[in-house]
Length: 64
Image (cartoon, rainbow, N blue to C red; front, top):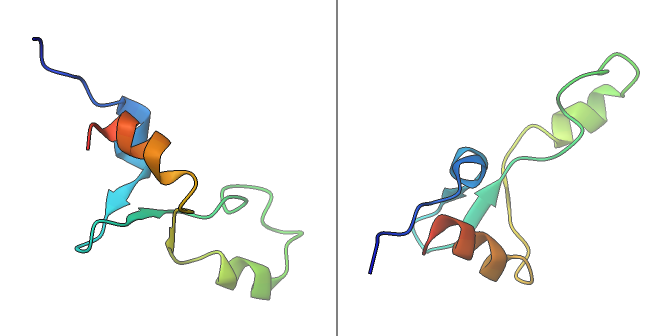
C-alpha cells in the first residue's frame, strides 16, 4: 500500500497540542484591519482549539 500524503494546506494551518487536540488561527485577522476595533484584533491574536465536530475531517487531512 502506498504512503498517504498529508494535505499541504492543512499542515500549514493546523498544529497539534501535546494532548492531541488541534490548534487553529482565528479568521478575520489578515487585512482590512483599520476598521476593526483594537479589542477585536486583540481577541483574535491567539490560537484556539478546533471544534470537536471538525476534528475527524482535519485529522483525515493530516493523516492522523
